[in-house]
Length: 186
Image (cartoon, rainbow, N blue to C red):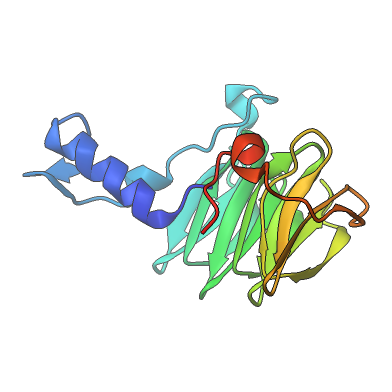
């Protein structure tokens, strides 16, 4: 998931090489250039929504100027060719290219869709939502990883498990987690 620090870091790198008109002496001077046109592989250039800035807040509008998402967010950007991540205070949400909410801005973090489910953190607990934002696996895990081959690694307190896409524990043998998911356990 892309965050604002990564975007600013990318901008700084681009500025360092003098490749962005919004840069002056290696500094980003025009954050509106970062907003720019959002991308969406499913629509033509003429119908792509644009992120815009008004009173230091961001929104989304179509090419004709019709506002799709009011400018009331600290950040708005395209994520995976289909959705736009929004930030309101310390919370994050997700809208589609028409400005329809998939996830209200009430989450600490979320990932990309993996095997039809999106890992989401709300108030320090992890759960999963489907593509429409409906909670499929409740927020009860203190740590979780994305689904891979139909299972996800989760922790609840000091215990670790694998669960299936229905949220049912399928194994408490997580010795193979590093090999399956590429993370080293403490």
